[in-house]
Length: 320
Ligand SMILES: NC(=O)c1ccc[n+]([C@@H]2O[C@H](COP(=O)([O-])OP(=O)(O)OC[C@H]3O[C@@H](n4cnc5c(N)ncnc54)[C@H](OP(=O)(O)O)[C@@H]3O)[C@@H](O)[C@H]2O)c1
Image 1: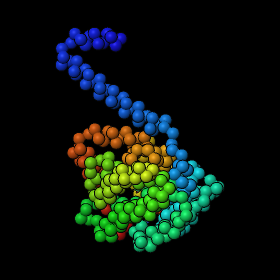
Image 2 (image 1 turned 180 degrees about the vertical axis):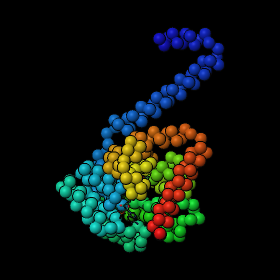
Image 3 (image 1 turned 90 degrees about the vertical axis):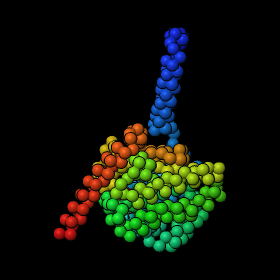
Image 4 (image 1 turned 90 degrees about the horizontal axis):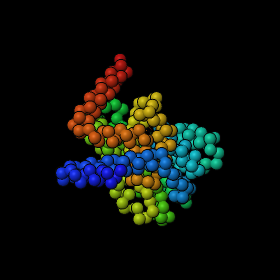
């Protein structure tokens, strides 16, 4: 068969053979990417997270994706340091985890990431002293209540967004890293967002998207800085997940539940420095990147203007 193709090619003009070779190489590249995608999403064994250390620290574990991660990590046999702002919700989540997994040890640390961060960091430092924190999930994050133009973002929201999404993640990482460096092992997962990476712009969510672009670059730099110290730093890039932040109650094929996302998220810990663990999200990512950026910009602007309109309507109803 191959001989036949080669014999036929020999009879063709040079330009045809070159085009054929180019087409064949593109096909080969595409096939290899597809096989790699299938392997990473469905066949590759997850890392044994206990090898990084027996404790994991999760920020924002009382709801959404963070709560999903807390349960998944407990399922993998890790003990947990849960860092959240609401002591009752922290207690409820810990009780649920202990009821489900029995032997998980849990330490709750109350930190409001939009409050006094120095005090919060001191509390985390005290809580992790002497613990082998091998996995860090920097999940805490806030967004706008609904889409708005940049000039409509009030000072308080602007400050909180940067404090929680940027400063909080950076300072928790700084607190946990020295222990990992000392033990020469660790995994850090920073939760980014498709808003900064998958789509070329996220109009009407500018500060949120920019804060997630920080997370993306921060993660990549740390990945390179600490790879030789045995620390795997990764930015996970979710698209929509059914949580209170996304204001989506029901999950679907395109929008996983928090548990569904976390299950996929845990499987990817310790691998590529940037990934979107939920397989349908990765297909959307590839499709979005194949479209002209201006087209995606236009679609996103229209979509976010719709969210803004509905949000304003809700606000005005509340005032009446
Ligand atoms: N959901 C999505 O579609 C989506 C998409 C891309 C990226 N992400 C990212 O995923 C991460 C988690 O989002 P999510 O959708 O799970 O959000 P979520 O459901 O709103 O949960 C956020 C968690 O963070 C906590 N939190 C919020 N503000 C805090 C503060 N000031 N201090 C301490 N804790 C605070 C919340 O605590 P309470 O329980 O007390 O409220 C909750 O535990 C975020 O970084 C977000 O940017 C989400």
